[in-house]
Image (cartoon, rainbow, N blue to C red; front, side):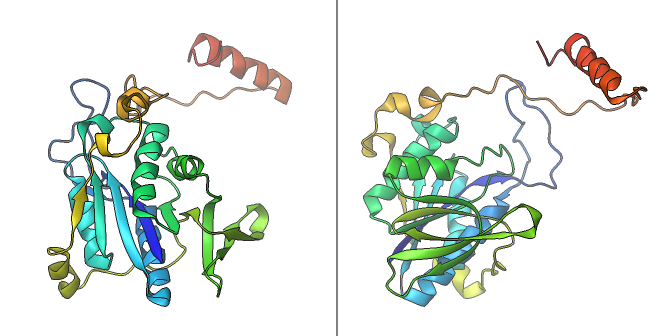
Length: 265
């Protein structure tokens, strides 16, 4: 059984961030990058399924060259090999363009199951897994807190945590894409033996031209969303209390949002 797990490298949540000179992203100089939190849980779940089935875990990462570090960590944890998509033509894309590229690479490997984290901690689109499933034409489930492979290995039973403390149980036919939630398991640490073994494991680089997807649908060119600017939260402003009944408060709030904050039109 081939299990694909998609991972992303994100800025360390503890890092002090600065806006870059272009105002469109952070200044990455001196910033530590780590494996996205929910992706760590996806990796652990993939490894557990592989251990129970004698399967193979293949790690996929799309990003600049530093993404190789994240893939090397997944290899140290136990993945068999990795696929790196660092071609500049694939970078700068939104969840739609990124999902297309990852789906094409996964299709080439013939995976039976794809696991991803629920969302990235930097952009938080929470949509890449959905796009991968759509591109592959596979069933998909999000915010999964439990995965149990059927004995015939043709489906998985998933548990999703719903509002009000309720759980939703579903059977999903394979192949499928599952986005797992942080807390689904307890991610392992890489052993010294695993770290040494990872140095010899394959990280195959795939260029945009090898994916069989129109270049206009990948990377920045294939994105529907564009980041115009980013800014740090403004601090130091006082809280303003609006008195009155609910109707009066709502009317005053709408006016302020329109005229002062200018977020409503």
